[in-house]
Amino acid sequence: MEIKEETTKKPNLNFIEEIIENDLNSGKHKSIITRFPPEPNGYLHIGHAKSICLNFGVAKKYGGRTNLRFDDTNPVKEDTEYVESIKEDIKWLGFNWAEEHYASDYFEQLYQWAVELIKKGLAYVDDQTLEEMRENRGTVQTPGKNSPYRDRSVEENLDLFQRMRAGEFPDGSKTLRAKIDMAHTNMHMRDPIMYRILHTHHHRTGDDWCIYPMYDYAHGESDSLENITHSICTLEFDIHRPLYDWFIQQLDIFPSHQYEFARLNLNYTVMSKRKLLQLVKENYVCGWDDPRMPTICGLRRRGYTPESIRNFCEDIGVAKRDNVIDYTRLENSLRDDLNKKAQRVMAVLDPIKVVIDNYPDTSEELEAVNNPEDETAGTRKVSFSKTIFIERDDFMENPPKKYFRMTVGQEVRLRYAYIVKCTGVEKDENGNITLIHCEYDPATRGGNTPDGRKVKGTIHWVDANNHIEAEVRLFDRLFQSESPDKVEEGQTFLDNLNPDSLKVLKNCKMEKFLANTKALDKYQFERLGYFSTDYDSTENNIIFNRACTLKDSWNK
Ligand code: ATP
Ligand code: MG
Image (tube, helix red, strand yellow):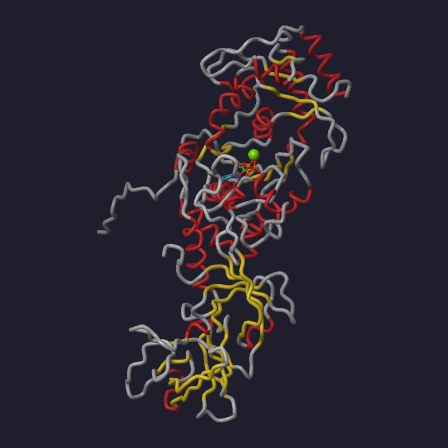
């Protein structure tokens, strides 16, 4: 008889998945629809990636769909450039949306619904200035005061609202407000503004409108129009939820529901689009895709893979309470991914020349492993000759104890090549080493020690007679402070910028293998880290970005 183990243990679900499973099991929804609703006022960052992975991820897992909806209700800051970049980044992350929408496509419907609310006596035109409205809003402890315009007749409201739309009134002179309760304990329910007058060109609707809906009015209604079942957003919106529900109930439309999760915060990083824009506009970085930026396009240029970002988002989970994630977790995710995938090569960033005096004047080809983590990656030939480059800091004249790299009289292994022993150095008049002399042992070809003698150190090298030169860009954290947003009085987050976040190395020496590299090709430079070819790289001016070091070097 076959014995089946009864297991009641569910696979680990996050709380959003639990809600969805319950809704599907109870029959509340036959299938689910989520949406990702970016405002096209900047490039996407790693925080958005978290939201994308969650929204697209749960829909995919439960056989549902995800819409992309541009939340373009604020014409002042929005632009088509951002729309295009957002689409590119989502696709690059590996997700496909079912439908593409724009909140601005719903402007007419939203207007008609506003008229409906006026007719029901649930909305009114207010002539108070923003200042007056703020004053009359009350505080958390004290109730607000009703607007003197609150009891306008339905007819008057309909007439004024129509004239607001027609452009009869200047910016800021009138608003449309929901008539709820000026004494409500939730401040967002104290007659919130639904429409404001803005005589501003919109990147999609042009000059069709001079009144624009507020986020709280537009968002839930847009969700409802698309039959979104689970409208997932970040925690700061939980206080908006009663209003989200109120509009949907009063209009009696498809009951979308909002669920909140903790936004992603990363240390040593700012994520507000306003601040990222400032870094770009004021040239603290070289663009939205500067490899130091936490933007998706910046991470891509840096060398991040879609998998590494998706794995990171999966790994950190979905929290209900705000927390700060350590930046090294993002880097570790990249290391794990590139360790499996990246072609290994040898490159010398800070070269010093070594001459192997007993080596013939010919050259030979040695076999090197392309990726020890992936047998199918195979091997390649690396050229070796009498003069090679090694890293300047792989040699020490007066080494401390347990120094296993190159020093006079000590044997060291040249990766894939031979065991060599340093016999002496040449110096210039200032005492700087200009050339290192070595002798090699022909019996150790491939790095073997046939007699079993112990050689502890292995260093990388590049053939000085057969190599390419390239530029390498090394990055450090963009901010020195763990929470760049926390500043003393009179300071801004800019005061926390790390002045040494970019280091450019020219004339680095590399294997010929890299001659035909293309933008975003990824490598492990042995012993140095993971590198990705930059967009600016050309055949004659090859440029690599260091994506990350081999190990976490920050926790030292
Ligand atoms: P910012 O504050 O950087 O301007 P935002 O929230 O205004 O960001 P939106 O374009 O409105 O940016 O965001 C689109 C979606 O991404 C929203 O659902 C938002 O909740 C989510 N999102 C934004 N930042 C984060 C974050 N740090 N972690 C998780 N989700 C985020
Ligand atoms: Mg927003």
